[in-house]
Image 1 (cartoon, rainbow, N blue to C red):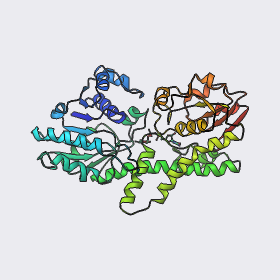
Image 2 (cartoon, protein in one colour):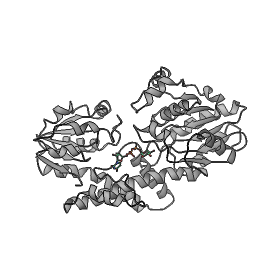
Image 3 (cartoon, protein in one colour):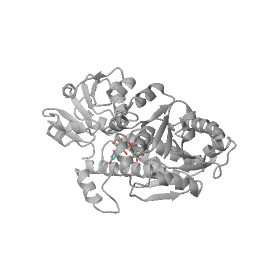
Image 4 (cartoon, protein in one colour):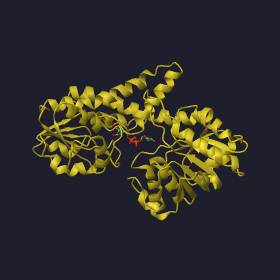
Length: 415
Ligand code: UDX
């Protein structure tokens, strides 16, 4: 099939690369010329496992010009939907993309499906995006198709997740639109769940809200366990064997960060507020998550006075296998350490350049140099942290690095 992807961020780029790898002819559109230059040269502008390899094998046509999408059977909208101040979702980029697509729809004769992949709150595709597309003078369900097909890609593992989905959700305005998008995924031996547009939008939010809830739940259990001397990981192992519970996303620690879970939870809470519903569980999930990282400071203070101490931080990305530091726990914790008068030295295998933009004033060092500090916080479970020599050190571990237990003083946040 001929496919276009609007927005070459982490999601759009993975979608474009994987669809090209599956044999589709792909056009990618973005406003960032430097990004497009890299893609056209067969290189990835971001760190994402396997992406460089695919981009060097396939030929994607990357351009700023929307005219390139004219020939496409399906146009995916993959632009970002950042948070507004009040937690609600900003539709600025999505509506801009829809307006540009509308100008193309006005001229095209062939039937195209516009498929929203950006995470948008229930109702957005039908009530906001579809009317913009119809401003072209063409009619949805007649002249063009509309779908909402959310992604479930983890950062750093996006290529793997795209190629090995658990399910594919196709929200469709009409049957013909849904058939076209479903056909694209013919080769995957997984259920394709076909629903209406707003149900697809809600499946994405409910999935991320549930994952976030699982994390805050196990952290709450973990906070109780820590006080009474129980290892939460043993508890989670015992719980997870019950198929109804499942063992994934029960890693207690310092909670969730990143560009998705916190933002999506806030947007769902804001959407609930708009209809006069107070989502108490979701609010508590977020609140507990904010406080969870602060436990590291409490534990640290048991062993060192922060003022004039050197504190080392291992791990700046919000999860391993990415250079992304957005909403990472390191941001909260480094801020507190600096406020309390500590000198801070940090190391991360990938995220130091991104973190430096936020914190130019801290020391960027090797892992071995960080280990020379008075005390060390572990904030991301990078595999290489299992190879370090922690003997003789004071270590507060937020992510359960087994090797760190050899430290002279070792404290786990929930164990
Ligand atoms: C998430 C969803 O998993 C994905 O389906 C969606 O499309 C985008 O959001 P991502 O944010 O990339 O993906 O990473 P994920 O692996 O879900 O981790 C999110 C955060 O939760 C990380 O900060 C991670 O450290 C934390 N986490 C995860 C835990 O604290 N405990 C766990 O058991 C699992």
